[in-house]
Figure 1 (tube, rainbow, N blue to C red):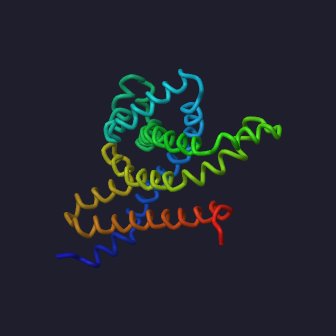
Figure 2: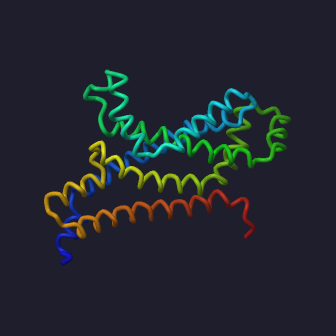
Figure 3: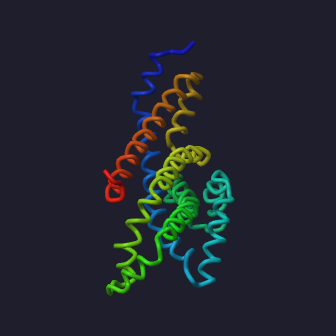
Amino acid sequence: MFDPALFLSALFGWPLAQGALVTLALSIAVQAVSFLLGMGAASLAASRRPASRWGMAVYVWLFRASPALLVLLFVWNGLPQMIPQLRAGWFSPFLAAFLALTLIQVAYLTEILRSAYAAIPAGQREAAAALGLHRWQVFLLVVLPQAMRIALPALVNEFISLLKTTSLATVISLKELMTVTSFAIATSFRFLEWYGAALVYYLLMVSVLTVAQIRIERRLSAGYVRR
């Protein structure tokens, strides 16, 4: 039978809350770094230089085709075999998960941002250049604001997907939300209550992201929508 008291204890207890904080911290760190790297990678993917385009195409192909679980295990178990310095204590499960998920996320964000850049008419870049703006000014003042409005839904969707993908880090013993849940179930053998509490945390985090997406979209689209 379902035990409501245990469910509420799990839901409002510190272990799951701590696991959820680790999940959020990992997701935010990966998304922030991946976005910054993705902006540069998207520019290389759209470069006129064949070497840059092909190099980014191979990178995107490799990490979009690789299962996240395999990349996590390769970084955690395989890299220390190749690089002995990674066998030290500073190479933690959090750092390994951060590195593995960032490698994957950059590949996805590169494609999203490349498509968004390509959607900006070339005439706008040419007009900005004619006004005397430097290339970086054209990018920051003309291209990027419009590209962000176009890419925002896909970026938030990727962040939501990343938030759920962090649960795979349980295989490298990162104490995120699902790892804590599994430990609790292993000691109590109460599945419904602990899985239900974990589900509530995921639903809450995704709901907050969805509401934030709607509000940001409205703000970015304010100058493009007739009232």
